[in-house]
Length: 296
Image (cartoon, rainbow, N blue to C red; front, side, top):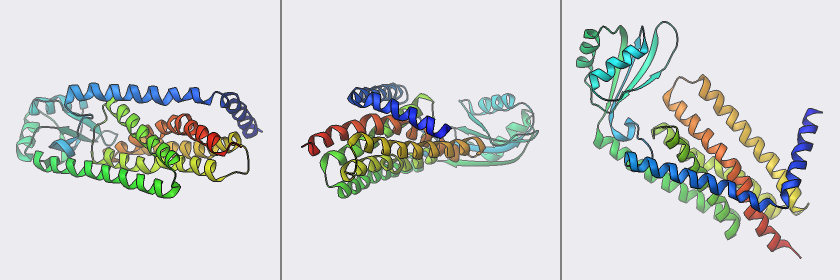
């Protein structure tokens, strides 16, 4: 009964906005404008659209097990490096594994001596340095991978539909998803790392799924009226999105890995952005397209 009532209310709400569906196009437009503004401000401050992690900017990551106050330990690291240090707790309990990331280059022996001198109790210290030239090469390769992935996705979409407007609408929706996701990353100071880059690549695939679902239903399914077809596609698409968001939320809460957290956060941002970009943008474009093409 609950399921039926929810679906019935959802159906009535959708019917009430269908006649003026085009007005909802303003929602993704505003989100894109805000995202571009945030990205632009971040670019002026940092010289790039997103803050780069050590994977792409160079620096040092230190992982160790510590006892005592993390604020004290963090202060010691900032004193040693003379710069801002990003602190991440990898485990809880009396003895905690912690990750410290800094743009400075550190040597293990010197760091251990200074930590001991400052009275920090620790064990299992491991250190990873990444030079600026290596990280710069990684960054260039990452940009190439992102561009190539987008081009290949676009080709697949055009081959699948062989029609300009539905193909362009699907690709535009992916662009909107990526733009909003990057805007949210910039707003919440999520670094561009190998993990977040992998999530952006995954988003290209995730974003186009619901667009292909909607486009296929509208173009090929002529068994019902356009409103019913769109509503059916929306039910399926929103179910897919909510299920995926739920799965990545669980990953975010249970994970103690910085890489997995980056992937989960960026994917969630992108999937949330996909809801207005698909159902308030792509659906509106396809509605106008189908009405003109199929009306007799």
